[in-house]
Image (cartoon, rainbow, N blue to C red; front, top):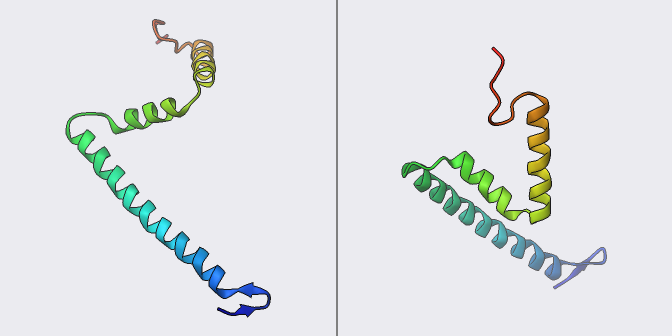
Length: 88
């Protein structure tokens, strides 16, 4: 192992190789996720809605409640709240 300009080539190589392995694992996981989404779609589920559910499940309860309240408020302000008849 040598130092070039104060940089340990062995140490640097170790970081680079670890990152490359992680990138390979990430690509494999992404492929598996695509397969699961395709399977869900094939059984009749809406993938866009599943992605939204996943996003919501990651949120803290209070954050989710605040977003839902704001969405309801904005929809009501635009006359789009559920239960309202659209003006034609």
